[in-house]
Image (tube, rainbow, N blue to C red):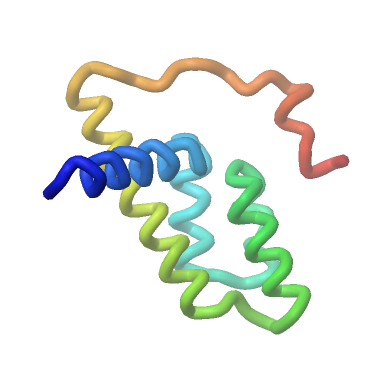
Length: 106
């Protein structure tokens, strides 16, 4: 692996973790198992994924298979990276304030 590939890999893993917090990870897993419109609310902790799925439900009755494949990749990467951090004794901290967590109501 050359330096640019390494940099890309680090950036991708960092971005994957930034997409979804630990609560959102469990909800993303549930959405992937049953990707239907009534489960769209499970993606509220991952606003970017929520917007993508909501748009696809607006255009069709389901989420495209390629989109679900991306969601699965994000789930796997976040799961792996989060567990690697925990194994090293690094646990993401912080609580989302109620004001910030109200984005779906806007």
